[in-house]
Structures are given as C-alpha cells and as structure tokens.
Image 1: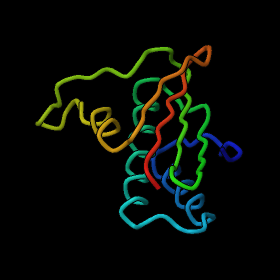
Image 2: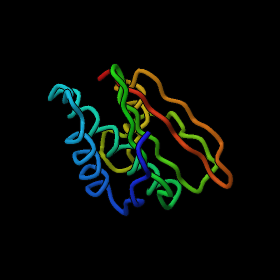
Image 3: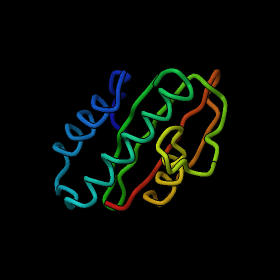
Image 4: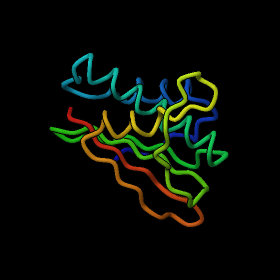
Length: 122
C-alpha cells in the first residue's frame, strides 16, 4: 500500500487522488479497469461521507495482479444492503455496485470506526 492520501472531503477529490495513483503505475491498468477504480473510489467515499460523516483515510495500493483501495471512516456501522430507490431520492445503489465491481470487499474494525478494503483485478 502507498502512503495515505489526505482524507478527501468530496468524491471528486478521491477520484483525483485515484488518477494520480494510477499515473504512477507501470504498466498502467487498462482504461476499463481505471474507470472501475474511479467508480469504486467515488462510491466508497460518497458512502463514508453520507453515512459516517467523514473519511479518515484513503489509501491505494497495487501489486502485479491487483489494485487495492482502503477507505476508513469514523463509524463502526457496516454498509447495509437495501432496495435501491428507483426515484433517485434515497440511493441504495452504492454498496451493491461496490460488491459487483470488486473481486474482494472486506470490512475491518478500526476503532472508533471501520476500514473498507476493496480489490480489483489490475
């Protein structure tokens, strides 16, 4: 894992940090993989801001086969699977999207909150 990024205050900052991280990789991941990474980061950070009130850490990592993202927040509450709201008012799409795009999604206690670690194929 790389050194933690300053905690983002909005999803756009998290996407910018992800783009900067990807720019350091050699070889670079495929365009579709980068798009998936940006969507994952956006969803994880948006969920942390919306449901936990803050992001306390954002960390990226990579090995030969996998890209990793860790997002920490101050809430110990786990993400909840809920029926998506098709009217667009209350959401419900983020966590299912994270699970669909990632090869692995792990939630770890990190008192007082939690860390969500996702991995996607490089």
